[in-house]
Length: 134
Image 1: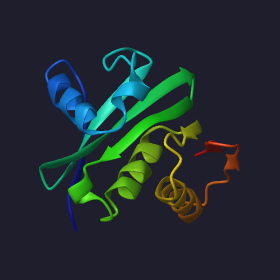
Image 2: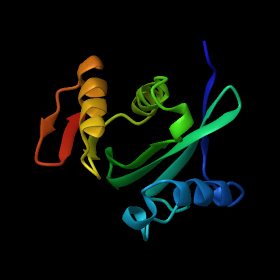
Image 3: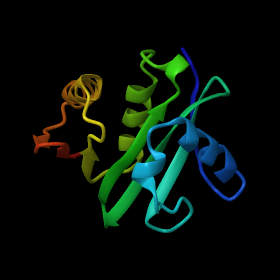
Image 4: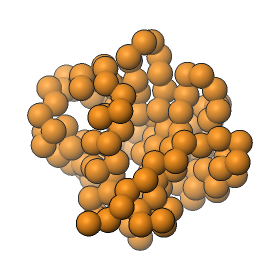
């Protein structure tokens, strides 16, 4: 089994995060998202020591979280990494979660439906947002 590792973005890894953001569709969407502040967290995602993506999380209130971005580099997609990383994130940060489905594509909808349904999450869905608790 592959070894998954989350590395919190700090001033030493911010350049790596910026490089990944430039490759993704997220730069315009994250815009003013500050990586190193008390209410926002970003993690670099590694599998067997290889960088495969990132996740950006916003904390709006105590135990209320939002997935602002989840990105897996194209060559590493469809290997189950995003689902495994989300399960790990949810095991660390318990509370109410919101996921906005930016760029609402069929693959994005299918991913979030599958992840939420397999983990037994009870999610309320609005037009482009899932709300649920872990």
